[in-house]
Image 1: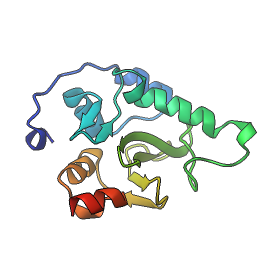
Image 2: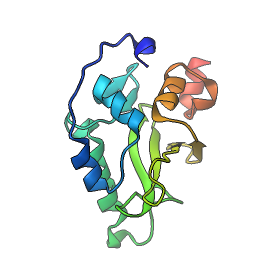
Image 3: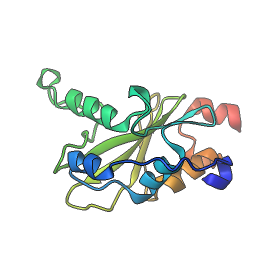
Image 4: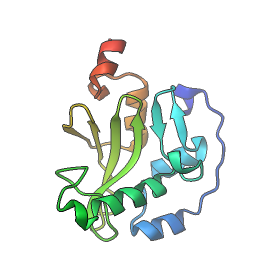
Length: 163
């Protein structure tokens, strides 16, 4: 990722133990490394990478708390915004969002507290709604999206503009 972006590492210090304590599972090691190097923000003016300390717009933990609250709101019934999945709740299995694009693509980890260390990436485009599973690291997935690998173009708008 550093070679692709030409970025100088930021060496951000994060209390991962506190974050992982709240979640009840460790986060992917490569995600933590990516965040420490880049911080949260926007890659290539279109891919939003959620971090921790850049304010509410890029704070993945704040986003997870809101998503979980909405997902568990009994007034909404059994409907989840991430059907057929649910938002991850500590000790369970579900999704945690870590990125998105300006074309409404969303990127999540599927986290299972009983299988720590396995973090498949699930992605979908809001306009299409189908889920795509990628059994690879966060950094590999980001690299493929940013290097314009066609099978990672979820949004129709992106495919039409960049083909």
